[in-house]
Image (tube, rainbow, N blue to C red):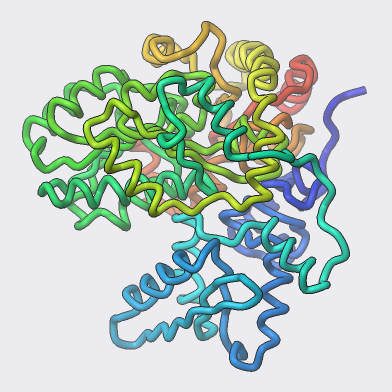
Length: 509
């Protein structure tokens, strides 16, 4: 019997209340999800936690909104009182222009913090974007626990949970991948984006005091990383995008001209979604010679697969991927390089800014993280086979993965073993207009996220950059970065490789 069957629209992936993905089985569903079509949205049981407010949090919000003082107001529940205060400040600053008054208010009840503001689509978009970019939403498990205390549910979801010191257990396993880091260097965050935000904020403040405000984005990165750089650099001219991760000459020219003003460089190893690996040793040398700080995100491959800490000042990564391999929690990590010139200061500043993991999320992560290496071993076996199949299929135009010919040499310098590639593969199609047909008939699980036991595929550019794929200017921007809007992003799971290949072969024809 096949490992795969079509999943109905909105089914959680995996089938638990805390799933981080949900089924979007057709391109019609993808378009409806992005356009907020009620016919699609109302069928979603859950969604990726930084994009979709979890049903437990929604239920808790509705409970709190029964209070008369919240009539006519929108309420956002946040990960902490500090995050709530930051959101109030953001809304007040963003709406200081005439004609739009935020009137945000801090909220606190039953140990939960949040922010309310008058009902307004514009204010709601500002608040949601802020919490999405920074990772500031209330944890689903914390919302669940509060519902239980308020007698609004009878019992929490039953799941395996680590019974001891969960933080120590997580760090014990992470030191296998990051052996030079001490416990104080491994700072856990409530999600990968909060790890990135907290590190960016700490480095930016430190470097601004030295007259350094320019930030370089090397390669096309994940959308919220791009958003942080665009929104929170000092001026628009302080954000510099370098399209080609392999163009060291361009980097040398920029550093030669502006080195004394460059605060830092952010890149992914490999990048998302083109799976490109820059020459990290050369990049690190360039940054150190000029006093810039290097932030490296290895989420696509995992810190278990690539040895990047010796070259970075801080490694920022999502532990949602691969370490939380059941696909039922979000978590992040800031790993400070203890040999870096600002290590002591950055440890203190990042720890003071980061949103900590909720206790139950931490205990759930500790219960899973010990299986990371065995899960990755299964994923690696399947990834190589699937990449080979796709590379030889006549319907496939180009295949990107860690060992793509353009990036193999750079990747192998960092890889912990010859086959430690991670599970990510992206590919483009030869026939224009074939995306909908192929995607709709695929039997693989289709939804956002990656790095879990379950294979996942999605039309990545439509989910991450719908604004760009649906207008001519956006399409031109993607083309300039050599990004095909119809690119499919596949992350291989632990299912039998032959079943993954069979499902792909069936859809590709």
